[in-house]
Image (cartoon, rainbow, N blue to C red; front, side, top):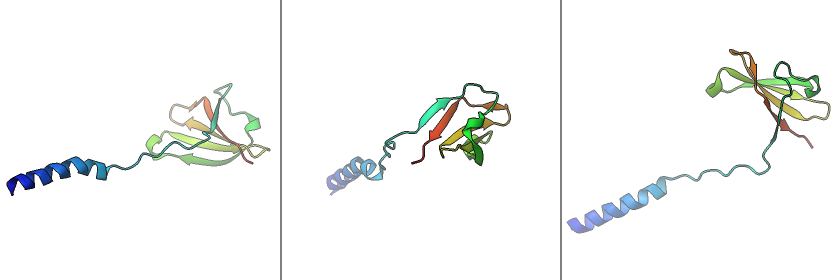
Length: 96
């Protein structure tokens, strides 16, 4: 009886990690393109109109400025308010 209980416990301990794991999501196909700003002192006028501002609580010092140009392409520019910095990488979101 004791041997059967120990074998059952050992089997449970071997199987339980498999049952508690969750599948990691695969990255989405067709990753968005990024481009670099030519100057980190200003946002180019050709980016279009500012249509939104978002913030992420994990990066509370930064905000994302969302621009839409005449072709409806969206560009996301990250701006740091405390150090007054513009990140050089801009995300492009094309529209069909």
